[in-house]
Image 1 (cartoon, rainbow, N blue to C red):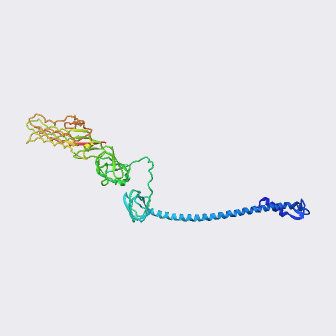
Image 2 (cartoon, rainbow, N blue to C red):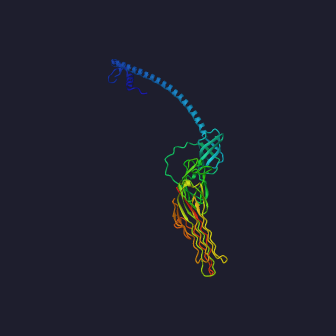
Amino acid sequence: MALPAPIQAILTRFRGSNNNAYNATTNPLGLGQGGHRTNFNPRLGDMADLSDWMSDTAEAADASAGAAAGSASAAAGSADAASDSASAAAGSASDSAVQALRLQGTSTTSRTPALGSVTFTTQAGKAFDVGNDIRVQSRGNIDRWLAGRVTAYSGTSVTIAIVAIGSVTSAATDWDIRVAGTQGVQGIPGIPTMGYAGRSSNTQIALADAAKLIDLTGTFTQTFAAAATLGTGFYIVLRNAGTGDITLDPNGSETIDGLTSFIMYPGEVRMIQCDGTSFRSVVHVPFSKRFSASDTFVKPPGYKGFQAHYLGGGGGGGGGAYKTDNSLVYNGGNGVSGVYQWVPYIAASLIAATSPVVIGAGGSPGVNGSSATPNGTTGNAGGATTFAGFGAPGGNPGVGAALGTGSNAPDGSSVAPVVNAVGVIQFGNAVGNHPAGNGRIFTSAARGGDRGTGRGTNNETQIPPQAGGVGELLVMGVS
């Protein structure tokens, strides 16, 4: 350690002092020949200064030694505390390791990923408590996984209600089972998208169909996965894009709008939403169902009422006469088309859950006269078309031609248009054709049967009378 400059100077003067003759120039520190008178007293002062410095240095050293001893004691205390902390950390790490092992297990149970309840054999003593969220991951493929919630855990058996699966759905036996974190708060939803699918036969509606528009064609029963599997908030839009009837049948005893099943008639578009236990629906586009044969109407939910267009069966044509005494030909009368009636609104409450639909049959034709029976016979009236307490009568038949009348037989009588007190519009009918004003609704059915033709002395070939056309009914939803 370097000495302070004043102390170094004192020591330099002491080292330079000598007993030789004093000379102010060549030996200024000499004590001989009177030099002591010049140098002795200054050296005494230097000795006092040196003594003071040494005393101060000793005191400082003593203080430093005390501080060092205190630091050493504190360091020893810190070392003890560090040792205690290390022991506590080791214990905590051991406990954490034990807890971590309880949060996961393995299974060699062969399973094919699928929605619904699944049971795995695993280790006992795991933290697979009922209600915990679980993820089951295949070690062989990152995309083969199942996710759900524990519904039962006992011994080495854990049962999980699976609500989501990965894109790989082949069977595996290399499963890691881990407790998953609780689902977080729903974030701000993005712009919704809607998928699309089409089908002509049943494929069970599953979670993967969420937010899809599915076009249904043909006639079949459309089934659904369990409401608990589809979950709260699941929805789908179904459209009957064909001409057949689609029966919607949810799982087991579950219901849509309180019904265990019902029919989606042609043209209907319906959104169906799940609340986790059942389903409800909203009609987006109402149906239009045409009946050309007697049947049963199944009232679908979601409608305030219905409108109906009725067309009775056409009357059969009358037979022509058979004459041999002159050349005159007496034809039978034409049948008349069925009556067309429109009911603009029938409240849904007035229609039963299932209601019979009766379609009026076409009237059978009369018979042309023959040599044995010269007179033609009158045809039969068309049958009435009825539904929900309303209906339209069939058309009147053509009259058979008779000898001695001197003319063709008359056509069936027509019905004039009328509007009754409850707004039911009856458009009437026409001879051998469709009801007046009806072409936009019915295009081919229920025309009156054509008349049969007679035969005279010219041996004309008789054309037989024709049957009347079959009636129709068109029912349309009012939502």
